[in-house]
Image (tube, rainbow, N blue to C red; front, side, top):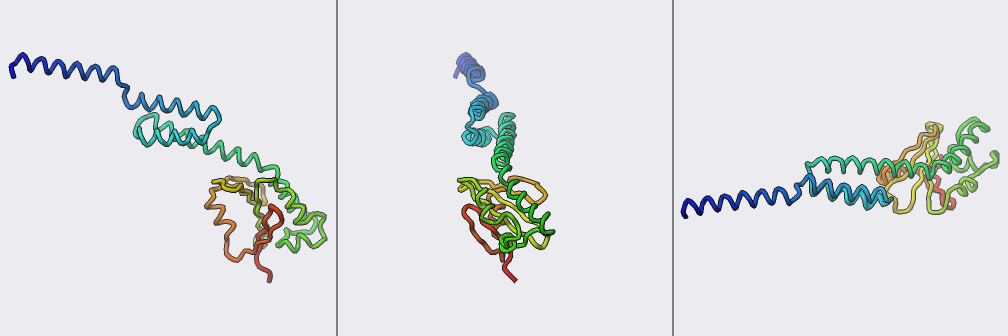
Length: 204
């Protein structure tokens, strides 16, 4: 190959590279474009679809600033969904807690079982508590006589998270696996009233 031809080839390669550099967006720009699309989907109220897009972006453009932002946005969506979940059930969980704490005020101690709650000495009973649970939900009330306390759980069928509240009124969202572990403690007896499941230690 002559010197002139070599120079021509080099020029062609350089020009081609420059064209690609100017015309083709780099990874960061492409990731930013995908991030903007996912964000608009989130703002439109399609949070689950947005999370899917964020996760796809992270997989395809790992190491970019947009991927780091996508990870932050996933956490934000998750926290928003948790707050919304708690907000949806807080009022009814508080009603259950009000009944239980009212029993303690009248009787001097928390009921340790559904038998004590239904003894007739208190104005409310398990049937009343069961009526508090809204359609589409299942609540679990776990008696905890060892600590003279109780715990309430709220869950929707097929939901990936549940809500947990203790006697002090502390409410939090927990994973489905944590929820299943909490309600499956060894030795607990289950008694169902409508959409409410009572969990109590075995008699005796």
